[in-house]
Image 1 (cartoon, rainbow, N blue to C red):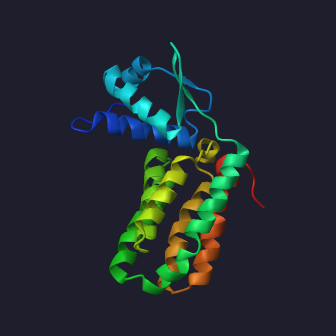
Image 2: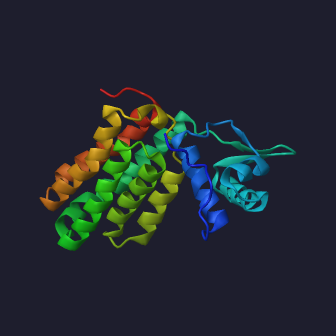
Length: 221
């Protein structure tokens, strides 16, 4: 699996790039709950000084990804099963109902853009590029919700996704489950373009449910 933690590209925002790379590593389970992190060690892996890493870690602490450990650094926080269950149920309440309206109003140009995003998810899953997979997945879902014109909805879902952990993701590399979940984004586009709002709702509901199943390292029926 491609690691989220590696040399930062020249010209990028160091703090922002490091912060999102670490957030993705935590969400995917690359950095497991309880892992102790230090700015100097991470700085060496990113190829930057400890300062932007420390700034990124402080922001991640505010977002709940890590907690400070006095004189030691930062520890990756855990998300309990109850927390994860609540996150998934709220996401289903927020993301499933809009599918009917989106199916009704979806324009061809928007469908083309969304299909490109969905295709990138499938491609990155097939190549085991998990950083790209996670970024593309977030990009697709938020772009889809933006079609509702409700910016608060988009931000709420973005925040909920940032609180999620998918500790079973690393074990899904090359699996049928990962390929199936990735392919569901293209299936969703088929339903939306066919104006099948009810079918899109059902698929979105089961798609989000994977967070409690495959993404948590559990089998699904």
